[in-house]
Length: 231
Image (tube, rainbow, N blue to C red; front, side):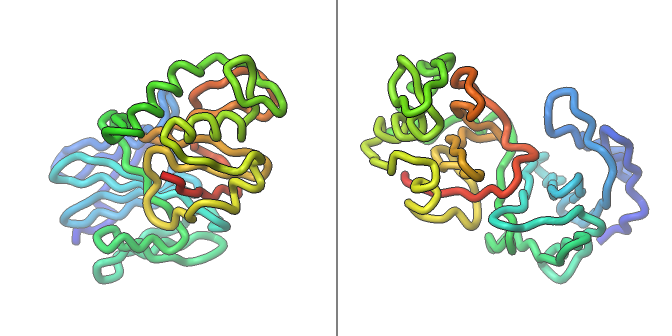
């Protein structure tokens, strides 16, 4: 392992000892901020707010670990612990083991435009239907293209794959299978009183609670989130 002190960090990138630069921007035109960095022989890790990012040095692939289902705290340190990375926040301590899929209260999102390509079959049908529903007006209690609310939209999308879900956001959040490891296309992101459909690369589709229209948004900086799987 190389020493953490050898990595220089700006608000937008990491400068590694050999001169390689790794962008820390995870949202268009949004500075990556400051936080701890950990450089190993295989990866570079960094913390931003409550999120942990990792870039594979061989492939350049990037992923993020989000605190899920009650995980919380600002990240203050990242430390190597055997085959794990210990994440210390101002509220707790956790261990992420990427090779074994054990994320200790975090959920992994793989990043990159390739992650927006849905798996073949029903997922591609859902992705096509999402595009057709963009711009549908918000309507409390609605579940059609004439107007829909958040749970009506999610239910309509999953019906394309032949999956039925409860009608309300609170019931959806208690149904299906809990997502404890990796978020994937078609998972339902649940926050208090609201649900959205995960699309990949940090994006979701939703009918916003406050009205407006069906749109694509990012999952960054949501609070109190869990996820359920129906596909």
